Length: 367
Image (cartoon, rainbow, N blue to C red; front, side, top):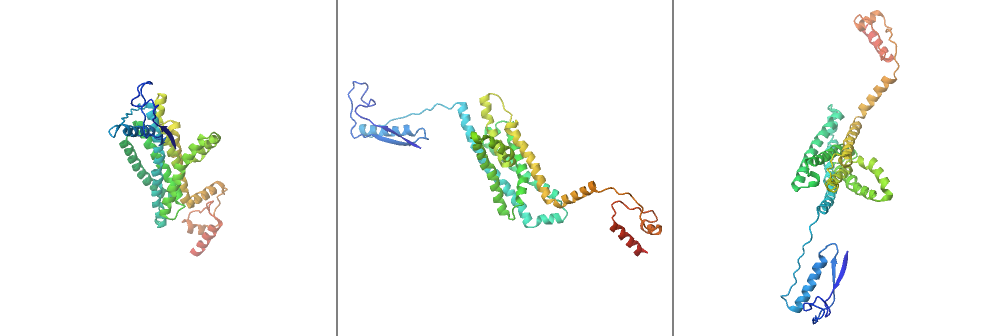
């Protein structure tokens, strides 16, 4: 946006160098025409600088090239609240853009899982006797360990740059680390779940990273816009509670924003605020830990369909099968001696008629 301001000197100007009072002789500035200054209104010093240059040019035209106008600007320092308010705004933008690398990280990890399935390495593991539970727990443990190391480097970078909103106190620093660690614990099994939809490692990296970008960066902005509109406030709260907070990138962004406001609220309210409170990080951590367990259970269940169906069948047989009375086997004592070494043979309730016929055939062959 731009605005304009006009300035001109004339014979009646009270700012003339030779006019010290209303009765002083007036000086005519020859060759001077009205001037218009176009400036950017977002730059506060643009108009004063432009006026100074205009006055200096006119002064030099009247007094010679050695004349000049000296301007000194000494703005008042910002108050503590104003300075903290500006720092908080910058931290809010930083919290949004911190989501970008954290959205890209799970896509990079997903490449290896899709690559193993693409090269049938996963199939070789299962054929060799590795259970789905062992396979996925091992994969999750390794990926979470990698994420923990990256989170530690992230905290070191914040300390190096002196970001007080996230690491201003030891408690706040530990809260920030636990938040990003819980995010990794939740987003890794979700990425494992999303990896089943891809057959190529490169497409999995791009697709999963794009999904986390939309579910984190984009949805966080959309949610804040909807909350700020009175007509959509109630709907936005419901969507956040039952949909958006099931996505780890959204919860991470929400937690970083809440944490960045703690320092400003402490200064305004005059009392300390714990980062572990429910409205700060407590809710975000609860959602991340619960969703991590849920996503991991779904992943293991997808690859354990055979074991689950077998367990369900066994459980249904145990619950629905009617107890049968034990009866003696209808074979002769001499034949029972062949089968049981001279001991009486009694059939179990689980032995079917086909098994009984097979036993009789074996006994006849033995004779």
